[in-house]
Image (cartoon, rainbow, N blue to C red; front, side, top):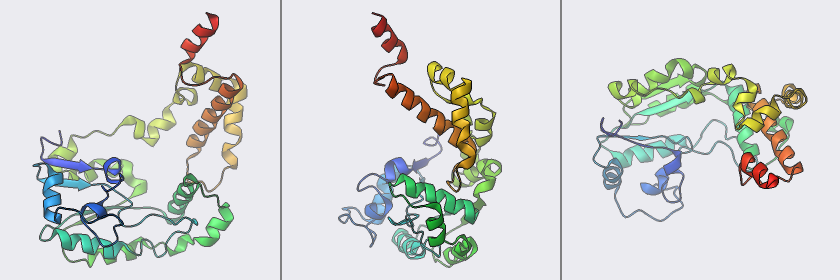
Length: 271
């Protein structure tokens, strides 16, 4: 549908592969890879594949959220202005549009903390809070600096907390009005849909759901949820994660390899 509307989109699945990030493809000064063989405009034409509109979706383009020590750069994204300015100059006279979501500083840092933990770096919550002061996150100052860049067409800003209400409008602006209005949001990605789904049904497989629905395991899943603080995850996600962890331990205790489905494993044992 996007192709029929003359739109070509590239997301993290493409832009985070080796040599395919925006800095490497367009030969930016901070790129760690070799210089590309194509010029910036030749690269744009190659990526467009004959379409008239390109969309790049990559939050790490301006800068990664935090360093290996779990320290968020404050003020927020200090290198963003220089990087966007250099990229816009390479694309001139094409004027790109920028799309940006801002977020409550406290929950923004909570999410950043979970990303630090995902990166195999453990920092205690109190130590992380001491290193990163949420009061220094000033989105208004960041956007004001983006507006000073010559060569930028429009800047669209919305609150991450309002995404459920603004989702369709964002897509209309990003993918042109008619094409964006025809894209429906997946129910699986909706937080409200997750809340309405019974806990046992969120876990995959009949055996998994049956085990999680038992009083004992359900109590274990819910027991640790209220004690988890400052992780950046909703309580429902803690419950689901705890349930999967309980299942993983159960499989290990039963010496279940996990490479086969439960029905096949049971059939092989009965045979």
